[in-house]
Length: 187
Image (cartoon, rainbow, N blue to C red; front, side):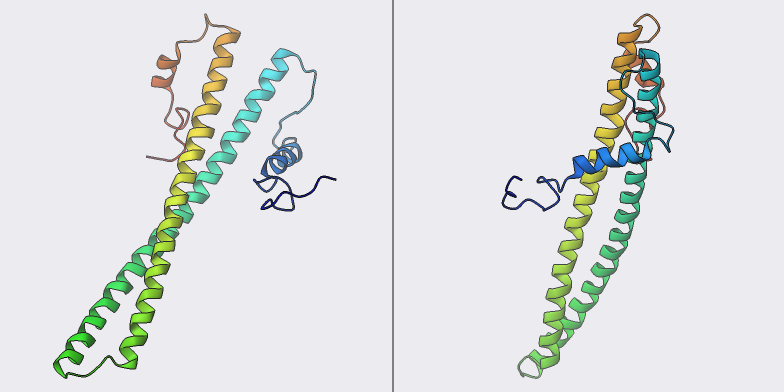
């Protein structure tokens, strides 16, 4: 076997074998979803299979976007709560600072511990904000790839099959529902 590349997961490739996993998942779940993955089908059968595959893929993408939305909402709730806690800690630290300055004493152990807590909670907030940003990027990517590219390819295939039957892409797009225009996230 080939030597494992530096930094690559043991289960394959830099993506952790996600491509192979997707193919295995699709192959395993396609029959349950009513999708036939057979070679040598006629064009009509293949077109029907392509439509079923597209429907399945859009459903999977929609489910992922929904999960990401829930994750984003939970992160936002955590961010809001953490921000409120930081404001409270800041007010407490300001109070301690005023007291120690007025009494002309040094920083107490309690104040030091609260400053340490503030720093740790602040770093946690930064991580949550970064995670929220990545989750938003994931949702945007899923919307672009699953919603836009998949449907654009299907529309192109349909126009090539019978251009006289299908309206231009711009007219089709204007009449299509929001989800079919490439937006999986409800606006």
